[in-house]
Length: 300
Image 1 (tube, rainbow, N blue to C red):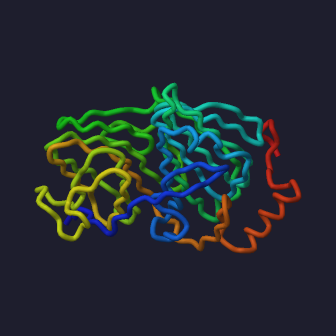
Image 2 (image 1 turned 90 degrees about the vertical axis):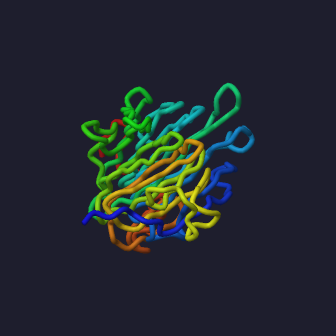
């Protein structure tokens, strides 16, 4: 018998300062391992104050993870140790697999009105793939499929599948799903999910009832009632589907899921490995200049 996922826990994102002084909101992070396995962190860097983001994230290393940057508004310039340079702008996604090691920088620039809106998700890599070759996938907004369901729900498919429509990013180790979903007012939206996968949503606009019930009556188990709004993350228990209801306003959220890895996590700063010894080696190599295993031409 199929079962709808119920709410396991609700998190309100918290203000933090990262990089060279970037003000952002963290939905979850290192203190929540292994609750979100295979995911490690989700940051919300929406701001209309350039002083809160222009200092950016200067040169820093990554190893053992993937970073997924989704920009709603503004521009983020990036460069790396392999000689790559680029810019992701409104609606674009960058899926970077750090693998064996990469040194890069990310510098938010905002739009003409000084607004910067985006999110960065960190996904773990299993031990067998932590030292894989680094790779980038820069996906422009026009390359991300968008579907509109009969009830008016609109979905941008970064990764995963809706009906016969495949997302822009495939061939990812953790079998992820990453959707940008907008459910119109007075609608009940149901989405199938894979049993055993970690599933959560992060609300980025409006309010919705994520209790899994057909009606939108108040849910006393959810703080503040059934309707959950902006800057709030909902982690779900296991099940075959996820249900969302709306009342008099639409709700927009990121729906993210992935297959848990179930391995030990050793995490320090921008590097995530399986053991403390692997961390020690990584930072030692960084200090000695042997951290990056690939040259600018992409070869060892």
